[in-house]
Image (cartoon, rainbow, N blue to C red; front, side, top):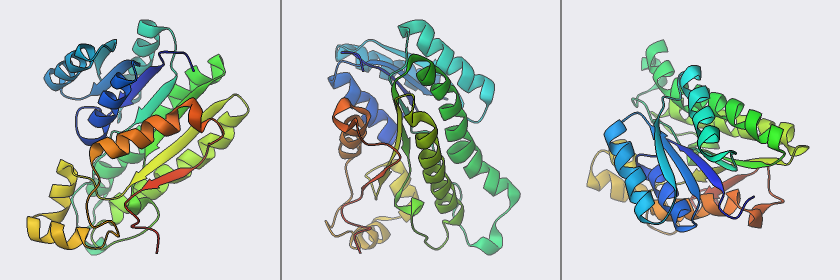
Length: 249
């Protein structure tokens, strides 16, 4: 990886994606952030530049291949290469029991979490395989290895992300392309607030975490920066579970 790696982040405008962008900026990376809200994206890019990073926002919707293709092409056109890709675009969907699921609710989750990750990896890997190096970091969840009531679609989508990660890692290994995933536990984001609904339920949920708290987005971002870096150069096809011990038992 070059001294100032080129980093592409999808789903960069909120939560873990945003924290990752800031963390890479502190490492003086050259960064392309993407998402679906242009005003917020331009504000984030300006914030990253204020930290001393070369940064650009590119509007993209990972559910559509043309959008993903153009995102990766613009990244390479701007910086000449692609060293790290963080595929953070994701949604929890509408919770509910299996008996109430519909094809529409399935598509609302899987089009972003699974199709979006697949399309992103497809075009990122085209670039990385050609240059003979690169690191892709997908975002899974504690639900990528477990189940829970009323979140079956979200859990299934994150199981799929982990399967995509492991398979792509095997495909990319010979060319020096690493593919890993970070699987956060509960993190202080808007998604956690939506999933728990209120402070009482949130407190009860966090009581099940051995460290008795939610993670900070910055803690997940630190794990992303590590596993994307040369310090993790012998790690590929792995799911790094950053969850306060939630899956330890």
